[in-house]
Length: 298
Image (cartoon, rainbow, N blue to C red; front, side, top):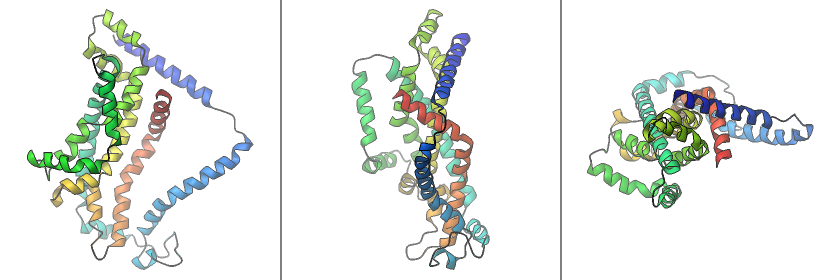
């Protein structure tokens, strides 16, 4: 069984490498205008982030200076010490990290199982059920928050982290759709060979399917982590106690009803974005590969 899964993994990696080699094209001078347009777009998208980071080092008067200046005239690193002293960042970071990681681990397992079921197990209404499952992607989260809040209230999960962990961990239509496309691309002959060796559905899932889903699961895990880390709406609805706050709620505290602590807000927002930037820098290759392979399988 190990030999079968190893051969399958090597075959998929070989095909991906050959495809990557085929997609490499020599540089053409006619592509320079396109690269310039992309560069301008990249600068436009990076400018708000750069403005936030540099504003976190500015005194209050320089943030609203006219005409605006990107770089600080007088650096004020004390904005960070003031922000850290005025809010419980350690507790909020811990809450966000363990909530995000728990959702990632559980949702990867449940999405992989559901994807395998939809892709390989034939039962009456398979396609209809999957279509209904996908249709839930079209429903905005704002429409489901009231019934979800009533359910959480009935079972006593309001103002607990379970309300932020269980629903997204057990139900992710996007994750199931993404992994199902990969499962359908895995040769059925691998499972048939395993069945001849006596492997059942469960053993085939753990020894053949899961190892071959490594690349899309890494990409899905990163997307899920980013979504949960930035989850402000549901945290605002379900959490009331300050000790339970996550990073987005903590940053929101710097914005008052009549006035805002703009220097603290910029520093807090920069601190909140730092882990996401680190995750992206470390895993950008997996993110790009996951998106590219997802498009080729769809």
